[in-house]
Length: 360
Image 1 (cartoon, rainbow, N blue to C red):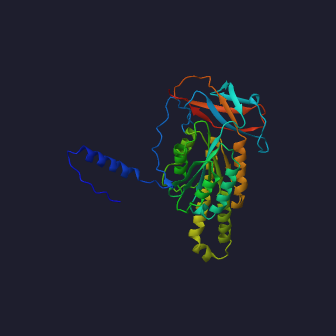
Image 2: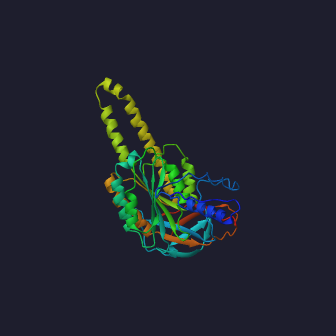
Image 3: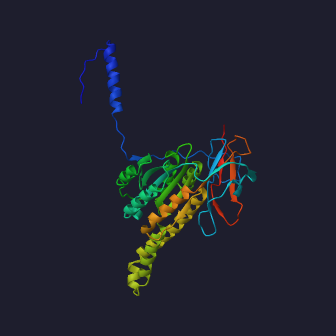
C-alpha cells in the first residue's frame, strides 16, 4: 500500500511521520520458516601453552561445575542401569575428582535431528520421517527437538519444540537436494542451534557422511561439536550403499567378455572409488561419535531406522549426568583431559574426552 503525504522541512510533525513510516516498513519484513544457515568463521586457534593436547579433541566449559553425560554399557553392549555415585571414578588430568551430584534422569536433553537430503538418502525420507516421529514420542516431556535438512544448503526446518505436531509438519518440508555439506551442517548445528543452559545437547544425523568438499574440513566440524559439548549420534547408510556398490561391481567383473570389461571400465573405477570413499567416511564418523560421547550405527536397511532411533532415545533417557567441581580452580583457558571409569572393568563408558577451563 502506498502512503502519500506532504513533507515540509520545517515541520516536526512530518519528520516524525516519516521516521515512523520507515520503521513500519522495516518491521514488515518476514523470515521464511526454512532458514538457510550461513557458515560462521572458523574458531580461533587454541591456546598454544598445552602443546601435547590435540586442539581438535576438546570442549568448552563456562561454569565452575562440569557436567558430563555418560553412557555405560556392559560387555554385551547393553545399557547398564542402577549405578550410584560410588560406582564412578572421574579423573581430570590424572587427578581423581569428587562427584558433587549424580542423576539418571535429572537433566533434560535438546536434540537436533539432522537428515542428509542428497541423493544417497532422499529416496528414503519417508522412512526417516517415521523414525523421527517415533524417536520424538519416546522423549521426556521436558526434552526438546529441532530439525535440520542439509544437502548443498543447510536449512533449519523446525526450531526448538516439544510438539510432535510441529515436527510432523516440518518433516513434510524436506526436499531432495544435491551434494552434501555434512561438515558445515555439523559445524553450524553445534554453534548456532544451541541448547538451554541447563540441558544436554545431542545431535542425531542420518547420512553416509561423505562430504562434497565444498565447505569446512572434517577437523573443524569435529572441533565445533566438542567445543559446544554436543554428543553426536550418526545413523549411517554406508553399509546399505556398500552392499549396492559391491553387488554391481561383482556383476561387472564377472563378465567373461573382455570387450564388456573394457566398455564398463569407467563404471568399475567409479564403483571402486565410491567404496574407498565409504571406508574413509566410516573412519571419520567413528572418530566423530567416539570423541563426542555418541555412537555410530550402521543399519543394513532403511527399514531398520525406527528401531535404531528408538535405541538412541532409550540411551538418552538412561544416561548418567555426572557433576563435579574441578579441584583445579584456575580459570586459565587451558585444556583439561577427563577420563570416566566405573568400578567394574567390564563396563564400557562413553563420555567426552575433556574440556577447556573458563578464562574468567
